[in-house]
Image (cartoon, rainbow over all chains, first blue to last red; front, side, top):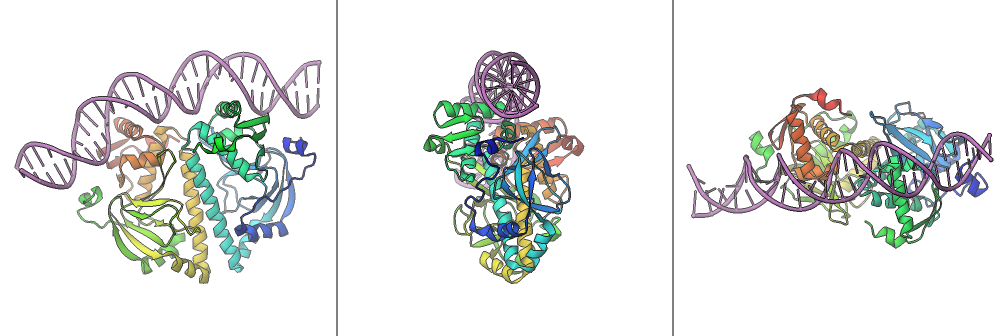
Length: 225
Length: 225
DNA sequence: CGCCGTCTTGACCTAGTTCAAGGGAGGTGG
DNA sequence: CCACCTCCCTTGAACTAGGTCAAGACGGCG
């Protein structure tokens, strides 16, 4: 039941608030105040695609994947949510994606309509909603660009993205299996594995375990694109 | 100088207001009222990447491409804007992409800060900003999914998208060259050409000219994904 | 200690790119 | 009015990045 993150930490708690853009402080602050803590076990569903969007979640520790399944059965992962991120907050009243914890995770849960009602009265919160949506759009746009790169470059981009999103600059504790990474990058698990292997053989990274990566030669990685 | 669209229409004007989601009426209505008309010639730049976002544009007729150039020189087209669409409206004060007319186009231009000031006073307009951003995010997410499909499926998706976005259900007047389509779909122009050729040979579509496509067998196209 | 899910590695295969060579259609000048 | 020119598009042939298939290897947990 305990995951990598837990066993390596010794404790279930993690340092959660990495560099948060000042912009969304109001939103996240509100969630912190009125959010109700809940533990989500690995692979448990937060909500399902096209289900009513009743709640908004903030990741305290662990990680969440938002995904959809294509007609041919392949799975597309739209986003990973890491500690500090807000999940499930959109204009639509139904969810566009399903969301599951990739690992045993701790969340703060807030009633969505309560948050929206707040925005209606507080123009500042309303502005934060816009900021949040715009931010999310930008991050999807970055992903769009990523999918045009080579397999090598995508995996590098992923590793760098994770390094940036986890406060620890050089040590990455991956909170998801290869399968999730592959479905996120639009590659196969074999290719992801090969590219990581290659990066290790060129001493750009070092893998203590398959989930634990240390960046060794950041500049060699960055020059890629 | 005259483009395909003009020569086939006989006139420069086009029926511009296709099915507009009721949500953004307030925004587009405002732009319609206070926007100043301007003609943009083919390949002319509306604004450049990382330049200050001074103006917001509404496409009256023609089309706009938003793009960025990768380090290796390849061009990524992030979006096409067609008549009725709003271009250049984000939270950021600098543009994330460059924007050019793919064909001689007519725009309505509005001062961005004027629009934002309006939103600050009018909570309804503020809500429209959120809606607009969320809508844009959704459309990028759809594109993300598209890039995971096969070449065949991507081209089909593109044709269907264009058919849907241009009011004429079955006749498509492409406002952009193959190069743009390829850079939008993450394919080469050769592959785009081949896939269209194949769709024609199977009688799914008919190409009167390379820019003018009639949908012949919609169900055959749709069953793809 | 042995099982099972996850990850790696190798050998082949295919979708799509690359390279190369024509074929139109529109526009311009003689 | 025609000839030419240029840009855009199509088509074919060879090549390659990444996928598929098939064995293992590792490591955590009972």
